[in-house]
Length: 182
Image 1 (cartoon, helix red, strand yellow):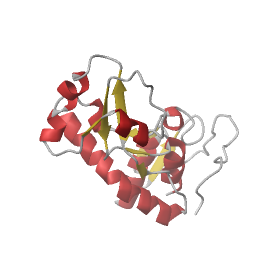
Image 2 (image 1 turned 30 degrees about the horizontal axis):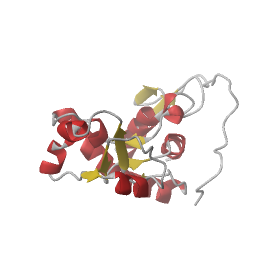
Image 3 (image 1 turned 45 degrees about the vertical axis):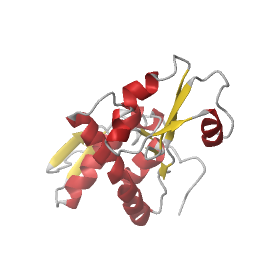
Image 4 (image 1 turned 60 degrees about the vertical axis):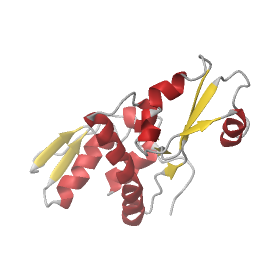
């Protein structure tokens, strides 16, 4: 399985399609969303064509940070937050499926996210503490814990830190490439 190193990129030119292409569904955009939709529809028996002016993942999908972090962003419970939690949980199995289908690792890793602030102590807990009460995985981090979780990279001036242990990351470029191949 290919795990590291750069992904071969197609030359930066517009794509030309032969005349007479036929499909049940045409998807415009070969990023993560377009390639995911194409994969799902093809899996349900549809003939799909994905159209993009460049190669898959050439735009925002490859530039994205790849953070799967709904908790770190949520100031309160709502349907969009619930969707984000479910999406984050589905990424582990998607990464395994893509590795099996394509031989490519997409860089999925549940590593957690440490959120720090220089603002007054207690501010982060007031904003995010509801998640601990909802058993979502949230830990208050004193300076020692923050230093351990960040391998000593946290400023000594940080006033408060929270650790979201269930948050994850994925390599956007690799994910898009694997989706396009699948």
